[in-house]
Length: 56
Image (tube, rainbow, N blue to C red; front, side, top):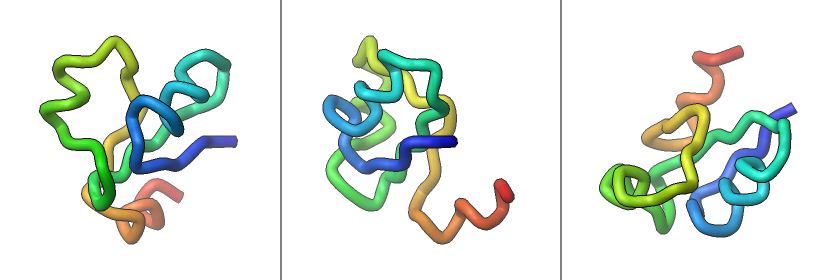
């Protein structure tokens, strides 16, 4: 199971507080710079949702 989201401080924060894998997609609100400066860290960062098929 994985939580996929484009908001670091909401979507990814939920996964960060659990044992669920988190996938941040950069096609929305959050940026790589946001990740660098945040305590919330996604397990995977993708440019957009189309890249998720490469993980399967």
